[in-house]
Amino acid sequence: MSLLKKKKRTEAEIPTSSMADIAFLLLIFFLVTTTIDVDTGIGMVLPPKLEEDVEPPPIKERNVLKILVNEQGLVLVEDLPSAVQLIRDEVMKHVLNNGVDPRYAESAGQALISIKTARQTPYDSYVAVLDEVWMAYFEMWDAEARALGYPDYAAYVSAIEESDAENAIREKIKAAISIAEPDAA
Amino acid sequence: MAGHFQKKTKTKQDIPTASLPDIIFMLLIFFMVSTVLRETTVQVRTMLPEAEALTKIDQKRLVSYIYVGPKKLDGNRLGDTGVQIDDALVEDLTNVRTIMYRKLIEQPRLIVSLKVDQTSEMGIVLDVQQELREAGTLRINYSSRRELPS
Image (cartoon, rainbow over all chains, first blue to last red; front, side, top):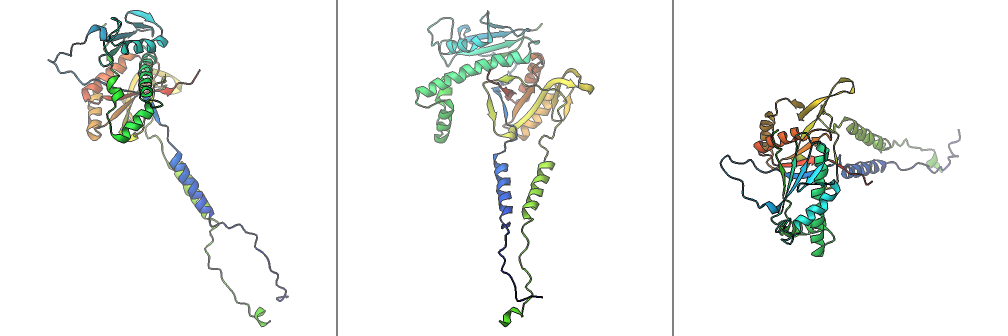
């Protein structure tokens, strides 16, 4: 036995004590960044239940843009057949008319979009029409926000949320969409 | 030197830390496997429509789902249209009113997400909406997928 000839060996180990911390960091990173399937959809607010004896407020015929979707998913805008893609422009013309054209609305605040379907209308054609109407409003809000010096409407919303101000754009151009009951067959 | 011969038995006092990351990973995997993301089984088919004007629902706590679509039957067949809330199919639509009203009392800022199949007819959707108006749950959301740019 040669106890005297002890060699000096440098240990070739990687320090593993920090591995746990690395694993924790990874775990926390993924915990923070994962979003479990965010729900997206078209938001709407239904009108409250009507009281029995209260008459609905009178609305001028010219302020309402009537959109009718039939059983085949075909669209009538103000009794004229129309393509789904054309609804967006029609809605913008109607809302931003400001009383110029007698066929369209008197002002943006009074404009109303009425969507009427039949009971057999497929749901996806209804959503396609509703989507176009909402896109028209989104575009108008974007244009208003740009006029106020914001890059888009989302930037405007986050700016007013910080200062607790009123949403003047939504006040000016109200998204008034009504879903009409189908005619009794 | 005499010191070389007086070798002391030195026991290491460190806890071996090499296996700690494995323990952490085991924990991670255990939670990954055991977490249940959706606690309800949907008994109707809901192929959502596509849309562009989407809003996100950030607060999941506020959301309650109503599923409308053709019932899933054995062997990949589809039945007639059904309405499901939580775990059970709602046979009588007037029950929607009471169920949603109870939910509204629990959560006054309730948002009802309507997960409706593309092929469903508007009639049943309007009936459900009428019930929601009766219950007073007016904030709704037509759940839809992001349209793929064509």
